[in-house]
Image (cartoon, rainbow, N blue to C red; front, side, top):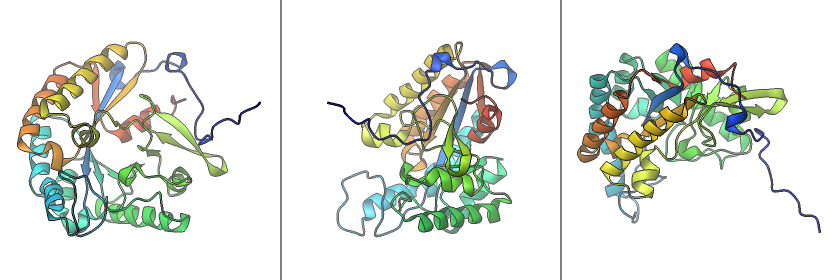
Length: 295
């Protein structure tokens, strides 16, 4: 009896890491590391959002206010930390940030951070929308960023990593050069899109990410810090055999809390002290460099 193969996305083929071509990041380095600073805004009285405590009837003041702490307090402490360590970052921005707390976007712009599109708000998922509505969401968010930053973003992370069957197609057609939704690899990988096009998938972490770690798996501040340092140490050793990407995904309302900030400071200080073998960069710079090498 023959069994049908499981459904396939059709975006990329299987590729074993050891069989791929070798290449270096700038300066002969093999480990590219970037900080993804997620700047998110949520609807009051409805919509989605990570929860500190199980949500009750709307308006859910407790969880809304816990998340809003990130934009009012936590993000400013994170920016100061990155300044102190001399680390670049990418700002993954809900376009609603420009209306809710434009000072945060201004501070990232002043520091020269790359801006990555992150939808309109994390109070919605784009993957459940009809194609024309999803296209409008991408256009609306992109246009807002372009108007405020002077240029459209090159990269996109869907709110809640939400994709429809056509999301990569719509992003490529909107001029995006890379996306961060797929976490299947430690190297950039080309995804095929309709009409013979393609868009580059740059690794974005679901392990070195404070929402899955702290909210999902209930990691302590020290546990999340250890996750960062041990991942960096292991990947730095592994990168002798292949160029790799390590992302560190941070949300100000989680790691901007004082006890987690203190542990994060120790972790980033430790990773930076690992030496010049790490290329501290942005996902856009990774995409630009890998465009000619990615399988």
